[in-house]
Length: 313
Image (cartoon, rainbow, N blue to C red; front, side, top):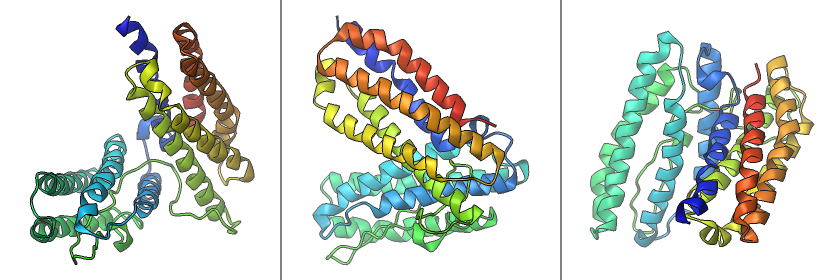
């Protein structure tokens, strides 16, 4: 019985895969990118990570530092995974690999810092010792980002300042990771130029990807229907956010045929994804294991169509 209950939930790995695809929103897993496409995608994910990092509640005491560091690490680990799936142009690959290695080193240092604090060491002392090394790696990574021609990745605003009332800090740099295939850092405001439209579109696509990723993580972390029931309200909120982001895609007129095909495809398939996932949650909430199992093929089919739309060329 245990295997039967887990099987429908484990099968929804497709949801997380679709989130990665929509975040990539481009060509074939990132292969065959031009230098400009690579830079656009790298800067787009940096802007998205900045937005998430800016949303973290900064610690006001040493006690708040550990959860802050852990939350930042989670955001940046997601970045690095997306980064590693990107294939830069051959002439940028060496520098890109060096940047990735530096960012991995930095993550290791921040993780070690958090582990020491969690083990009971004095937070101020640990941060004071770790800061110079973390900052040094960060400076090297920023320099590599600039060598790559990136404008958001490696900028000073990428750092997360963890100043507390104890006067300590530990910087966590935003990785020059890559997802969406257009320019970054947008507000979706009044800029109606082609670049402004594209940037705002990227922002909304990233929001949809984040919501879908959160939904997929919730389901994959569940061990069965009973476990999932307690998480359903949060999963429904994720779908509400996904729907809101997808609906905003109606508002754009993008400058390239490729982006327009992607946009219309996401608009067409996004509501279908939301509908089937909501029906999945309804069945789970009712404790209907057979219903959940029966919906799985439709979930996978709909997610597949969504992935195809996101990778339209």
